[in-house]
Amino acid sequence: MARYRTGLATRDRILDATAALLADVGPEGTTIQAICDKSDVRPGSFYNLFASKDDAIFEVLLETMRNAAARPAGTPSLDEFIDQWVRFVLDNPTAAMIYMRLGVTGAVNHTHIVDRIRHFQEKRVDYLAAALTGANAQMTVAEATPRAELVLATLNGLTIRYLVDPAFDLAAHVEVLREIATA
Image (cartoon, rainbow, N blue to C red):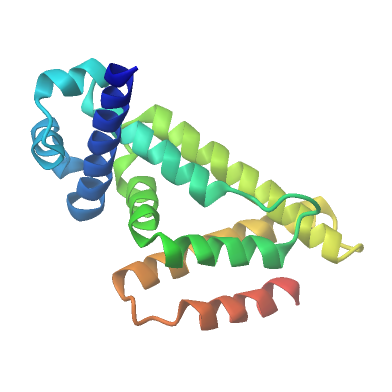
């Protein structure tokens, strides 16, 4: 049991180091040696837990996407979705940075990451489209889907703006987005 806990602690240190490096230097600068140095783990221990750097990055990405893609339970609500998104960004700026950075640049050469990001994107669009049609009985899913895409794209853009300039008033801009989305 102690070996198992030690292995889990080592895995957590590696994933924490990977996340920190991804946020600081991106996927290009996140090398196995940098991960090992930052986590104080030898390469052999790294390879006991992960087959490659990409596997460690993918684990970090999956956890980040789970956090970013968590949806409120129950009836879809645009306000709940937006509130949860903003809380995620404000409470977890490092995770938000990793998600945005990998989504924009790091996933280009990794089809499994691209597929996962696309999957989460489609699920969020479906949720938002359902929220929009639920709020407006006259709106069809076909009409709501492009609007949902625009809401999500705007949230992504506002998130990037906030991450590069923490003085940016994310909450105020999100309020404008709410008004536009429901008009």
